[in-house]
Image (cartoon, rainbow, N blue to C red; front, side, top):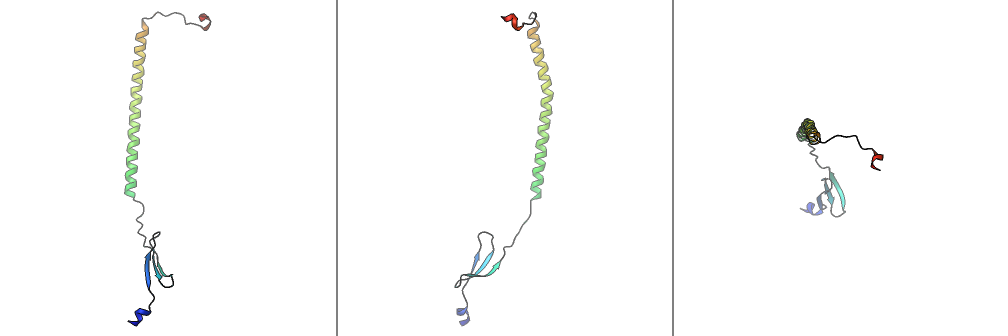
Amino acid sequence: MSRRQNEPKKLEVSCPCCGATLTVDAELGKVLFHQAPVKQDKGPNLDFATELLRKEAERREALFRQSADDQKTKSELLDRKFREAFEKTKDQPTGPPLRDFDLD
């Protein structure tokens, strides 16, 4: 038992920054031993990245389809607008166009 009383008091402290374990002599206030943290780096989650890429490709495809549909209906819309304007102006008399100096 006398041996235990003569042994210096040791503290084990975990570093809050890196997670390393430090063994410190309490009397001297010095680090006796440093144990590096065990890194459990799993690496990037490729399944998650693959899923994101798939969803992005689906979104791009949906936007392209929507754009193509809009272009198809755009020509129909312009055609209908032209016909309606033509029907409204068909019965109006036509005359020579007005020139700027005719307005004076």
